[in-house]
Image (tube, rainbow over all chains, first blue to last red; front, side):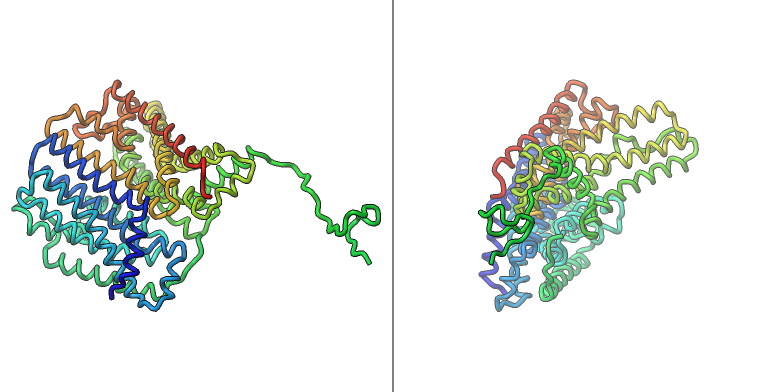
Length: 239
Length: 302
């Protein structure tokens, strides 16, 4: 199921010269904010939870997920070079699975790691907040990567749709329409963080069992469907 | 046997074949015409006009959302008894709908410049009688105009609605004027930043993400830090933190000079002194993005 050559090519596509820059900028920004906040406010559990929940989990993780998830396959489909990969005797689901593993790894490294570091800077893991949000970021990385990898195979405008989901659905609708919060990767992953973090430090809209089921279902279904989609991929010209 | 064709027979013996090619002697439309064409094509393109039906969907949808929200505001104002003004100020509109504006510039700026870079059509442009400055100016102007159209149309809807509802003419006109200046500044600033980010990468996907990162993520980050600075009693720092994201810059300028409500925590925008700094930073960013674009296209695509 895992093809090292495909993995190597994907890593190189994702972490090539300029592309990696934006992946570095966001975590760096988080760390800078953490340092600034610590300097302003001192160690405060509520402030730490606000920064990690409001910036790291709500904007940074989805954005890194979009870049890594769609970036793992989107550009190849876009410029048509995917045909050389598809022409090799490698199963299509294997390609998707390998690319998913790479996307997950990249998203985790660039989102969970800085989240943990920022949490340690903010309040030295008081009330387990740093660990809780790191776990949320790890879990969210998996779901986001699968989701956005699927988007990358389905649509040419995957990044835009991914951003619409992350910014408009999760952030905008999520804050107005309570029901939208049940259908959000962010809330599912927070459900896990809720269990790990100290009492009342983190809240989620979704119960843990439901969240676990939904996370697993979305990941598996998205990966499976992306594999199917790649089997019947049509290469269209640029519009 | 000779294989002569065409009109010249017998006289010009040096020519073996003449298949009747003629030099172009019609009018040459020149640099200004090429620049205008590039501008109008880019402007139409950013709304999907002259492109495939699929690429019309997103810009038109975003444009529709903007107008729809404005219509709802007008409808609410008309349905409310004894209303004397609209529920939302002209200057607040763009701030509330920043996600829509962000998505528009993020999807259209790469569309405008990244594809030229990726398919190496930039050298073809420069084989026409246009210079680097023409290309950059045309693209910048087109993007800024597109954003201006996107942001000013809902304001116009609100203004017309307010006048139809017989709200005070002088007040509405003043406020509308202030809103106009504010969205004009916003269009210039966002178009510049968006084009710079998009021109740096020939890959459309990365361009989209980069533009969003600069416009929306920086706003999220600045707001978070501002809120924390406000809560922890460093209120003086709030107004200077606003300098670090494009939207808070516009917000600062309009609350200092254009009578807008400030969205900074505590509701206190920068005063006139800090407002001048905000304005200078905005203008510097606009000039800076123009300079970066000029530099970017000095050696390009080859």
